[in-house]
Length: 186
Image 1 (spheres, helix red, strand yellow):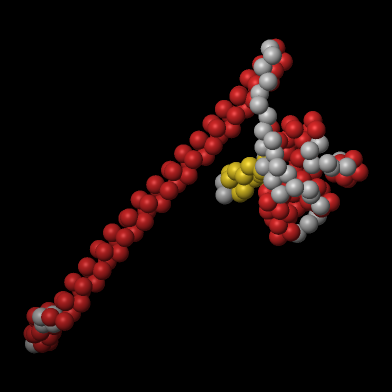
Image 2: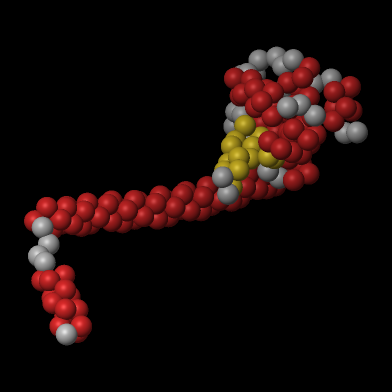
C-alpha cells in the first residue's frame, strides 16, 4: 500500500504536460542563443582577418625598409665609384626652439645607439613627461622634420628619414649649436 501511493504520486508528477508558454520561451531562447553564436563566430573570423592583415602590413613595412637600405647602399656605391650624383631632396624646415633641438638631438643620438627609438627612451633621456614629449614630437613634424613612425607589438617607434639625417650630419641644416650637441652626449 505504501508503494501504491508512492507510484501514484510519481505517475501524476511525470504525466503533467509542460505548458505552451514554457515551450515557446525555450524556443525563443534557443533562437537567440543561435543568433548570438553566429555573431560570435563572425567576430572571431573578423578578428583573425584583422590580425593576418596586421602581420602582412608589418612584413611589407620590413621589406620596404630593407629595400630603402639597399637603394641607399647602391647610391653610396655609385657616388663613390662613378660620377653618379643622386638628386637630394630639399627639406623645408622651420627654426627649432632650444627644447625642440634638444628633443631632436636625443632622437638623433638614440637612433644611432638603438636603431628605432621609443617614446619611453626619449622620456628617460630628456626627463620630460610623456605628454610633453608627444607634444614636442608633433611640433618637430609640424616644423618639417621628417620622422618615420613604426609600430612593433603595438608600441610606437620613431626614426629620422635617413636622407634627412645624412643631410643634417653633413650640413647642419637645423643650425644646432655645439653647446646643444654637448648636452646630449653627457
